[in-house]
Amino acid sequence: MSEGMSTTMVWLTIAMAGLLTFLLRWSFIAMIDSLEMPPAVRRALRFVPAAVLSAIIWPAVIVQDGAIDLWIDNLHLIAALIAAVVAWRTRSIFYTIAVGMLALWGLTALVNIA
Image 1 (cartoon, helix red, strand yellow):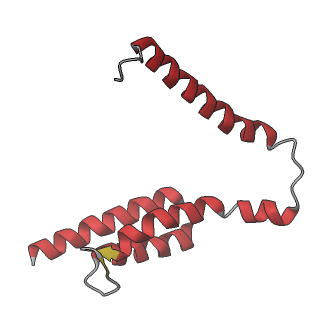
Image 2 (image 1 turned 90 degrees about the vertical axis):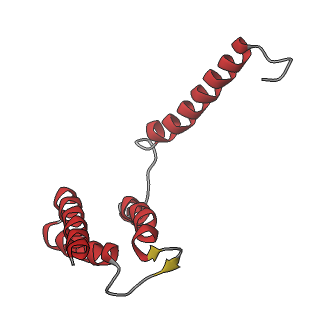
């Protein structure tokens, strides 16, 4: 801590930053009902969660050992493709995650046995 900053001031700063963050995020949630959005924007916003999840998941799936790996020996890619088929057929997040993880664990076990 710097010489001029007391413990009380540090905690007050943390509390104020937390409150400001909360208020900024809450304001968008509170205002969303009062905003009239065009139907095209509402339809587009439905795809945001899938796009964000894809942006998080796909680098972990296709990048192995620091390089892009799109070959059959990439077990993460095979498990992701299996999970994608389950998602397409069932439209269930639970089944998609469960089957994807089981596929990855099963493929890893098979490779380690061989």
